[in-house]
Image 1 (cartoon, rainbow, N blue to C red):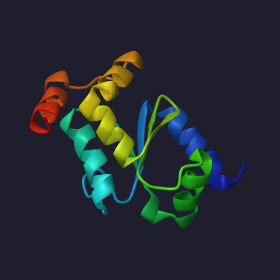
Image 2: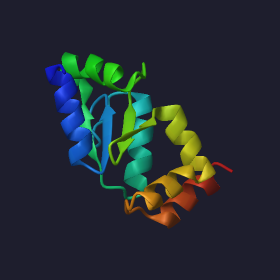
Image 3: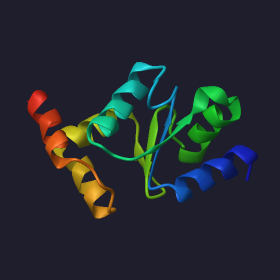
Image 4: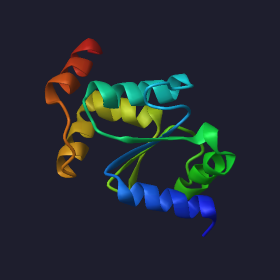
Length: 120
């Protein structure tokens, strides 16, 4: 395993929810990262953010680790969930709620419902 691969594996195993993103959850540096971080923040999900812009080996390493070409990437309980489009679809369909509930991750159900109502 490469150093980046080891660091990524340790991070996704150590935290229930991890978002590999461009920027940070308080200051996203791309629209896609901003959208996913915004959904998680609005829903009250506690998550660890990893700024791939701070380390080029992480930026490429996360793509290799997941075999997924784009950033952001969301992991729940060590499992890769998807990028911006997938998380958006899962939020609107209620699948993200189910995934969080199944994995024992706390979130604000009313906030999730508000997102769906606003996008109906």
